[in-house]
Length: 224
Ligand SMILES: Nc1ncnc2c1ncn2[C@@H]1O[C@H](COP(=O)(O)OP(=O)(O)OP(=O)(O)O)[C@@H](O)[C@H]1O
Ligand SMILES: [Mg+2]
Image 1: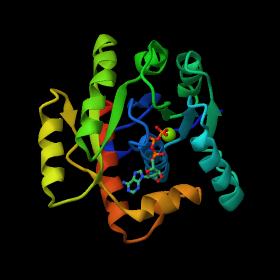
Image 2: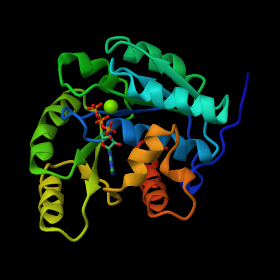
Image 3: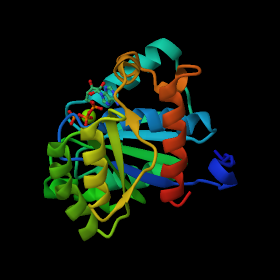
């Protein structure tokens, strides 16, 4: 079956891009970013596959909730694989989908390599704390070893706080790209995740605006 990819941000045509979301620190927002980017990209007319390599299976729970509520969307597919199967599975998916988003478990081991190696972009969420910032070095080292481009995304930010400014400064000093758009700490992210939805589906919300802006940046870095 053939499909013509529609132009995404800036009129670029996106095909077969693999974006891996990774961060050693648990609860940093990997799954949140995966689902929000997936829905945002889908709403731009792209065909999107999400691949869960985390045995916790939160992404699958989100997808099943979504399926129950909204029914099937042939342009949004869910798949699972082991950590080692990530490159094989995503290479297969990239032939049928414009974007493949890989969600990964909260642990950095050599296991993560297949998901990194295959990525056109590694998106690294950093929840707003120094501890999360420290934990970031592990995934940055692995991505560097695989020579993969990285985009750090500050998540759960609390604008206009000293901590927020400190973490932003720390991120800037990591020596990798840091997205200008940040996701603030908003109950909307937790609520939508539990309902199988995403921020883009809340009309006129701040969460929707920040995810839209982040999606532009992610596409630009993924070589859309
Ligand atoms: N920007 C945000 N604002 C509010 N809550 C958030 C935000 N980002 C994530 N959360 C909440 O924080 C918790 C952890 O987020 P999430 O599951 O996305 O992290 P994770 O990195 O995938 O975790 P794990 O390492 O366990 O896989 C969830 O309850 C989620 O709803
Ligand atoms: Mg997760």
